[in-house]
Image (cartoon, rainbow, N blue to C red; front, side):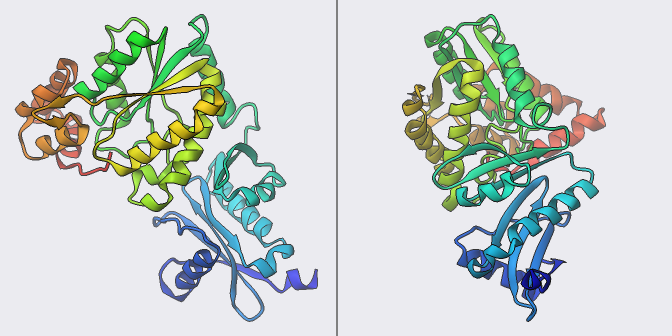
Length: 363
């Protein structure tokens, strides 16, 4: 249309007047403003009078903060923004893209070949892959889970742990769950935004459960408490945590649990972290109507205080590694001692210990 031609688009910065206009536009639309780093891109669409009428951001491999003024929605602005962001992502060499958006905006993305992963009353997650639907995104992850469950019992249990690091609290949760379920799948959060890197967390969980015959430890992938499904788990954005938690729980119930033939999800009680508590509440609300029980197991206590990974990290930061022995399985404690000892002679161990000893991550 002639009106459509009157719109112009350009990359804008978060700082300055255009960034302020973007924040005001997103607030007016009831959307949260996604945090962006230097490598991320923000697109603005302007009308003939240079008024910002639409915006969207490419944050890593995720399209976020997409919105347009209601009076301009029939002008195809959202599609124009998505098209520009996809083109930019391809220019950067990205092969998979994701979008976290309001459910009513999902059809815009579906019309542009995005596939719906899950939808709730408040949010939708969609994805697009260069490789196509069967070879990229969720499909190969679900296929790998089905392969892991092949030949194992139906009615299995599942637990998700970040294990930053793996404590006696995690061990108690998994040992108790394994005693109640015919088989237990432990999904380790793969997002590498914790103090302890993912590969170390995964090996600590594997070593700490090696004696439990009916436990299988799996990578959590990009669909279990990740920046894709649950970005506020890794930030302090508690206001939107419930929306993200509900979406993550829905993906688990509708896509992941069927692949593993899981009918029970085990969680630990959460005395400290409000986001994890919100997540547990979302699981209790979302899973049972879909035929999955949620079983909450009380936290282990030591000296009148719940055993928590944050307590372990605090002791390490304070140079009190020896005191963590009472809170950790021998496998975790021995691994930490080994890294600490090797830091003088091995540069890799030195860098890892520095990350652990200085770490102040939330989870």
